[in-house]
Image 1 (spheres, rainbow, N blue to C red):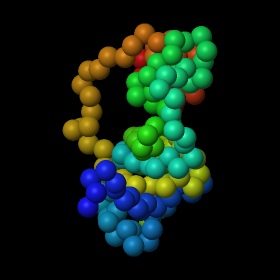
Image 2: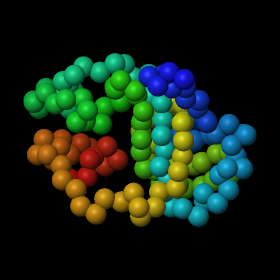
Image 3: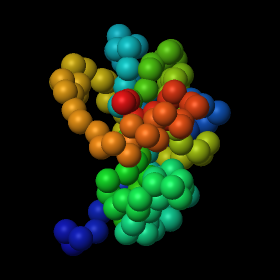
Length: 144
């Protein structure tokens, strides 16, 4: 096996604001409804290769930042990751709140969110705090 290459296969897709898994994985969701939140991994198939330096959220008034220091979808391996509120589970479908991906985006994995993933304290740079003040959608804020 070539260690520089990997093969990933989606387990489902985002459909109309829901995560719809391939029916063969439905049984694997048994018990997920006991969790309030889930972690979801996506393949951002419509992203492009990144520029090394970017303007955060395309705001030209901010200094250029290395793409790896941002949450841009445009990455060498465009893997998306987010925490979602789980609203409902039925069969192979998860109704969630907080999706920030395109309809049709491939889903690589879902996992229950537990206290283990919680950061007790964290810091963010001043430019992120400034972006948060300008952001009108609370789901797109970084948490300052």
